[in-house]
Each structure stands twice: as structure tokens, then as C-alpha cells.
Image (cartoon, rainbow, N blue to C red; front, side):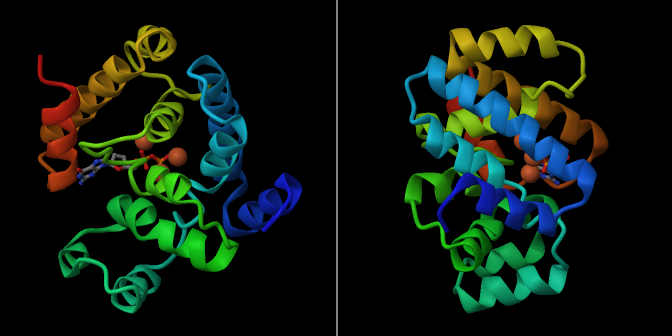
Length: 186
Ligand code: DGI
Ligand code: FE
Ligand code: FE
Ligand code: FE
């Protein structure tokens, strides 16, 4: 725990080169959004650098952490997509020594969002979605929206991600639906 360089080395060691480059792009976008929305840029940097720290961990690691930290046992029924944020935050805390609750909540919420999201959480959720290598229909528009109306951009992402997931007929995490009902409904 300490310098950005130290944190970068720990994250780099935990991830593929490709995912580490994504993390650096999320950091760049998150600090730009933080500057725009008057959020502490250092908090945005730390949250972005650590948001996918646990993404490459085994299912067994996540299941052990759910049990160790006595998290909601319903989490056992999900998978890496949900675990790497919700359970990954516990690994960031225990292994990287990051205890700032706003940062940990932003990591917890970075994939599924949440009904209550701080500005930092909204920023990380959006930065992950619109970092400069992301390419999907509407990306230019939603990038601009994130700097103009942050909450509306959260609603846009949630509506589009939910539609995409439903198109694939995969299971929807209840938290994703709560995010939709809070941020996307007109
Ligand atoms: O970790 P990243 O790839 O940078 O991005 P992410 O953490 O935002 O999303 C990881 C994946 O999670 C993405 O492919 C969409 C998926 N996802 C988000 N909400 C849900 C979900 N998958 C399921 N099955 N259910 C959800 O509610
Ligand atoms: Fe992620
Ligand atoms: Fe995301
Ligand atoms: Fe990510």
C-alpha cells in the first residue's frame, strides 16, 4: 500500500498484458471523469487500477473468499463476471491493503452498478465501459454523455447492457435489475 508505482506492479503481476492495458485505459478515463465531476482523482486512479485485480482468479478462490468473509451465500450461484467485482473487492482489501470504503464499493459495483452509487462508483462504472479502446454502436455518444450528465450515462449503459444480456438469454443478477430500475427507467 502506498505509491501508484507499487500498486501498478501488484496489479500488473495479477493480470495478462492485455487486461493490464485495459486497466491503464480505465484509469485514464476515470481520472478525466473525476476532474470533470470534481471527484478526487487519486481515489479514481486507485479504484480504476484495482477494479479488475481479481478477474483472473479461479472459481475456487472466489468460493473460498465468499465463505471466509461470510458474504451472501447466494453469491455461490454466480460466476466470474459477478464475483470479480463483488468478491474481488475483498481480495483488493485483504491483499493490496486498500481499505477506503468508497473505493471498495466502486469496485463492488463496477460490473452490475447498484441502486445507490456514489459519484466515484458512477465514474468507475462508466470509465470501464467507455475507455478509449471500447467500440460498440453509440460509444461516441455515451462517451460525450458521461461528461455532460453522468447519471444519464449510467442509465444508458445499464439499459444497453441489460438488453444485450437478455438477447443472449443469460441469467440477470438481481443487482443489475435494481440498477436498471433506479437509473434507466424514464
Ligand atoms: O471486467 P470487464 O470485462 O472490464 O467488464 P465488466 O466487469 O463491466 O463486465 C464483465 C461482464 O459481466 C460483461 O461481459 C457483462 C457481464 N454482466 C454484467 N451484468 C451481468 C453480467 N452477466 C450476467 N450473466 N448477468 C448480469 O447481470
Ligand atoms: Fe470488470
Ligand atoms: Fe463495466
Ligand atoms: Fe474492466
